Image (cartoon, rainbow, N blue to C red; front, side, top):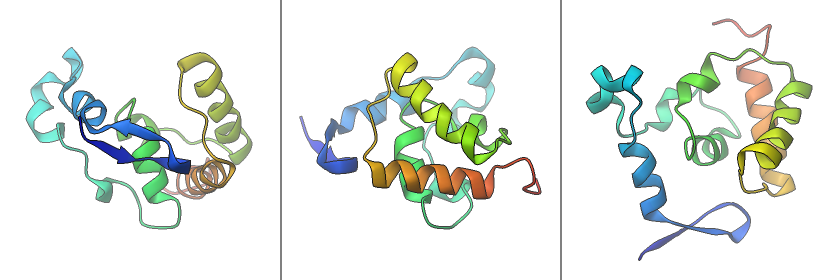
Amino acid sequence: MSRISFFGGRLLPAAFFLAFALIVTSAEAPHAVAQAVPDINELPPGPGREEVFYACYACHSFRIITQQRLPESTWDELMDWMVEKQGMPPLSPEDRKAIVAYLAKHFSPTTPR
């Protein structure tokens, strides 16, 4: 099976990402074809976008990210919760910092929608 490089030198099977692209909940079924392939351009440009793209889409759609408006401290706490309770692989300190900073900048309570 082919493998791709992932944060901090960890490797994940390419099939893992493909599987998530094919899983569609019943609520998203009418839009399944249009949303089956993620597009990084759905996220605002800026430092940390690529890290968010690869770390977050592995488990859920961007919709759940873009609808949130959380302060930086809450985004940071959410990273702990996802690792401890949801089984997300721990991020390297650099990736975590980039992800939290990106989310806080683009999806905070004061960010215009």
